[in-house]
Image 1: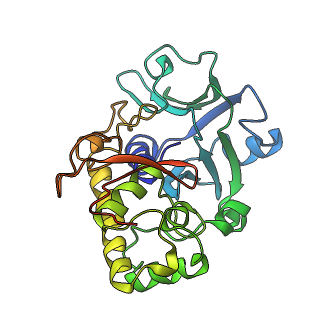
Image 2: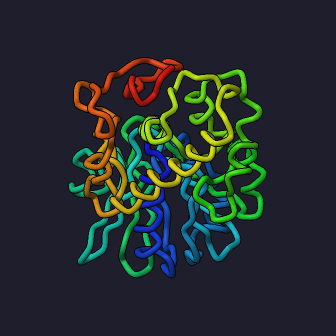
Length: 289
């Protein structure tokens, strides 16, 4: 599943491409991927102009002039592919649908714009979805009520970060940092990288971590995620950025998928362990249990 930096790069790419476009028609092949009533589609989607593209956690929000929004979750194998007469931009699971003729057998939703361009939502496994929701109702949907604050927002300070973890003092720090209700959008790659940067063993209990360590972890979470956004996301095997290219963050990763290599800080061999059921990469010297 894409993590926050991957979805942020998708959002930025789509913002440049589709804001200002007017939707002509929408087609879908399954209610599972497009669970919206035909009446709502006709009234609030067809003929609407795209006024903004936003992100909340790992969800893309496309705001419409009708005061409704398309809420899009790519899940594991979702793709968004924009095509016009001269350009093609793609994001998501890297199969042939990114570059082949569309629609194809994986296309679940097709949005046609009045200028002749198209936005395709493809999803092989049908886990992702595109929902049409009144924009002012988005904060009230279950997912949005549960998800924690954005770690990269300017007003999200160290004290706020520490406060979010107080509810999980009896769990491991890795479980807590992966919990989307604590903070939004941090997945396995960036959890490992941030914990390595802060010299914290991922199996330590939240309650054992000092205020100074939390301050360092806060700084590392923001640093590694901002770097990943700058580099277009990670080179995770099943994700590419908004231009259909794999990101380059993994070229800069310090521990993730580097087991058997030397720690760039101390030279100790990086090992892979399991914490909360997840493959976890650490330096056993820098991150003592």
